Structures are given as structure tokens and as C-alpha cells.
Amino acid sequence: MFQTLYSAPAACRRHSDGPFADERDRYLRHCADFGATRGTLRQKGNELLWFAHHLGSQAPDGVDLEKLQEIASERQSICKGRTAGQRLINIARPWLRFLGWWHVPAIEIRFQNQLDQFVAWMRDERGLSPATMERWHAHVGMFLHWCDQTNRHLLTLRPDDIDNYFVSCGPGRWSRVSVSHVASALRVFLRFMAARGGCDPRLAETIRGPRIYQ
Image 1 (cartoon, one colour):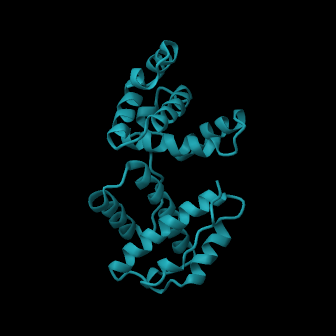
Image 2: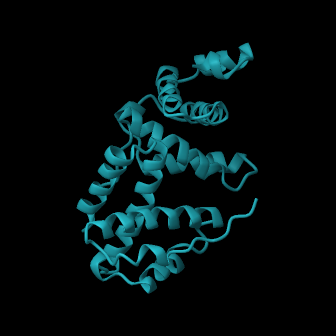
């Protein structure tokens, strides 16, 4: 796969000789099978190579969120872009899940069954890409955890509750693009729940994300 993505011999050798080359190669092939473009694959390959150099030899035993954030913070500190650290997390975590190396945080929530059903629906009925599933799972999981902490119930959720979530959790943490992604994920989840009688069917349409400019 590296020879397909990188025409320069030096670049190809750098990727082939780097840590966990076989694991990175298998994942990139997997992403290509799901329709990822060459540009997207090159970006994933570059980020994963940098990430692999900062993983220890014990990575196959499991990598947790704390370790991932530690490496992402280092990436952020040496890059000029504001989103470098988050980009690394968005690319590295699906790779770790693909390999079975991701150590899922043990956070029990009241709505775990609904979250599991949503993931099964995304995978089995919608056939979404692993990257999209990972992103929506994270956004919806955070929202449900907040509902659990604030003693809110899906059946009685109101638009004011959704607004409260964005106001209390978004400022200082989410960019306009992030808010848009969260809003999209919640709309899909609430439509999914409404179709099963789990929440007000009008709720999803009350969520409006920010306008994103080029």
C-alpha cells in the first residue's frame, strides 16, 4: 500500500521501515476498500507513522485515552495548526480500534443499551464507514453521558435540554466545525430513537448547527 501512496522511494522506505508497518498497511488497505481517496489515505498514513513512532512496544496490550491524549498534546505542541492534536486523535483512535488495541474507558451509562443499538444500526443497516461510526459513537456517547449525569431522560427531552448541552459543554472546547459535527450526530441519533418510540419525534428537527464558511 505504501508504494501505491508514496511515489518517492525515500518516503516509501520511511513508511515501510517505521514501527508497526504491517498494522498501518493493513488499516490503510481497509480504508481504501471503504472508498477513502488517495489524499485521505496519505494524510492517514503520515499521521499514523508519526503516531507509531511515539507508541511503545507494549501498544498491542492496549492504548488508553490518557496515552492517546498525551501523544496528541505533543503533536499539537510542535505543529502550527490549532487542530493538529485533534486530527491525530481522529485518525489514530479508529486505527487502534481496528487492531483491537484500543482500551475503551470503563464508563457505564444508563443509556448504554440505546447506544449499542445505535452502533449496530449504523453498522448493519446503514453500512457507514468505520471513521463515521467512530465519530458519531463518540459524539452521541458524550451526550448520553451528560444526560445521565444531569438526570435527563430521553423520553422527556426537550429542545431546551439540547440547547443546555451545547451551552454547558461546547464553549472553549468545540470549534464551529466541531459543533456542526456534534449537531449532525445528535440529529441522526434522535431520529433513530424517535423511530423506535424512544424520544419526541419532533426533537431532532429542532437541532441547528452553525453555518460553516469556506
